[in-house]
Image (cartoon, rainbow, N blue to C red; front, side, top):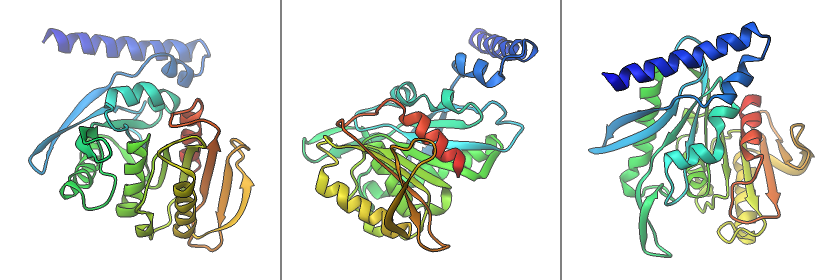
Length: 276
């Protein structure tokens, strides 16, 4: 009971601060970003396993149809760590931002089992596809999710899983993004969806030959030609535009670094999702 009262008190202070911001002429979005939203932990049982996700509700998620973003951590990572790295819940306060927690997966190159996501279709009985399906339904039952604005992104192994969702569950999402995620299954992608991808030139996991293959598969799946234009949000990013009415844009960026989440990635992803 004491813990419940404490949480309610914190929530009251949080919304009181936003009210003060409005009265003083400060943009409430700025005030919201200055105060870390209070997350909740959502627990589901899927295929006999207990699954959890860290949920940062959007500012008006209970009353107004709002965007929903799933953000997947990398191999050995955690939902809490990904929330601290990406900060999408701060960068986009209108959106409900959810950080699912992965179960242990095997990294064949090391023999290590650690929290993560499948790196190819048909692994682990598709338990994580089932989990995402159940999680989306659970969130829609709680919040007023705008079904036209549901997104997935991630880092490293989490980006790989985001691309897996792009190939296996395109109808459940509006657009996708990912950073530093290798993918060898993109030949299975058949449904165009807006996509933003960020990789480093020195990334040992997303090496040049794989990068070229991934780019070609993304272009094919999204019906994009070889020509590019600069992205309005950041001219350093290249936009491959679709060549027919059924295609979707591909935004592509290669930075000089390695296997990392670079500064500005979160802002770019939010801007991209807001465009779609």
